Image 1 (cartoon, rainbow, N blue to C red):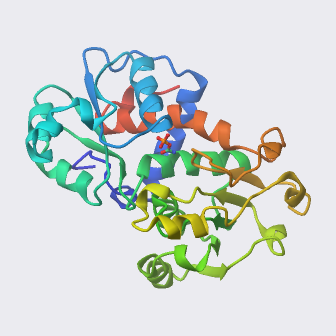
Image 2 (image 1 turned 135 degrees about the vertical axis):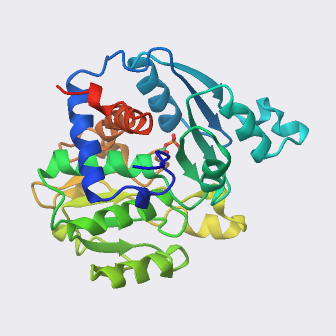
Length: 307
Ligand code: CP
């Protein structure tokens, strides 16, 4: 890879996805390796996060590196009016790698053009969340034994949910069939459907999933993204659109697994949490190993991970 930033899931090709998953599996076997000794990583989170920030920071620490950064833009000089451009220019002087979450779509690409070090996009508005996608691929491969020819159900907020946008693009390399289940106001945006058309990938759209859930290999639930609604009444109308519960899972294939990028609000009932088909907490754990692999790739250190 020329520019080792990871801004969009399309910055990697199919072989590179599979290489990240291979390295992540090695790291899962032994996550404590000293390959980041002497390196400093900056985590700049202009939006709230639990999993992404903490799993990236765990990943750095377990690889022997150090972390600086902020979890809240309110504690940075952004509140004094400093621009994103100046912030990135400054932080580039301090660190070897920047991991950034920002509410503006396109902000990660912009940052990568200014930074003198690689930038990893930890989520830019409703646009992309590529490290989440790679951990989703890892979770799908681990649970299904393959990424090829799967029936993937994407359920919930398909308009604002950046994780489903990145996942759709990545999975398009593996001949999936997609089932999009969303309220009318939160449908998959047309540009992503056109992308699937251009790749010859099948997809179906439904307002409900109960009668077709028996077809699923992966059930990928998403939260209705309250923070992206300009009209609170629209959010109230859609917030309880779907709730997956244990009874619904009765009518599913043995291999099906329930994924969710988390945080969950109420779209998966807690009675699913200890069901053998629930995988979302393990999925979040997988994020540490996959993010270790992404960091190693960004810093050109994967050759040190052989076993
Ligand atoms: N999945 C995810 O991005 O979670 P956080 O918002 O907690 O980082």
